[in-house]
Image 1 (spheres, helix red, strand yellow):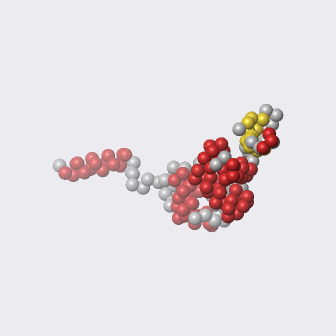
Image 2 (cartoon, one colour):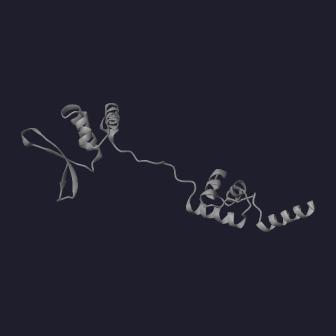
Image 3 (cartoon, helix red, strand yellow):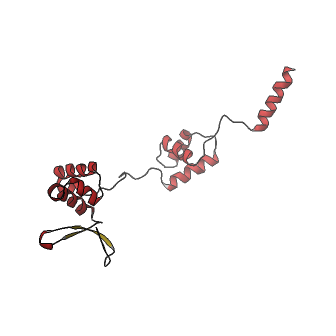
Length: 160
């Protein structure tokens, strides 16, 4: 690999015959993958190619398989993530939090119904996720400490 000071890029050098070398920009992933496959298959061998290009042997053969099935189009990096727009927008999350503070004992289903009445399309599960993410879960089992102490005192007084 070479570092080109003029363009501040990393380059991969493929030694050619008659001192005619071929230089590949390291940021061009399609060229890098294709060059690795060509060198691995035709010139320097698989193990030298994966060392030179920084891939694993498993990934080399995955790329080779993609190339054999789809040609160079199979080597193009694809966008990661979902194509769907998120349901829980910032505005919706803010509404869920607002409703939760207005009615802290309302369940996710009730909040989802209230949001639907306001024109938001959201599932009960999305409301549950938001409540959990922001730590807004109600703790139905716990009672204030004063009540617990009063109950204990009553129970011990009744036994005597």
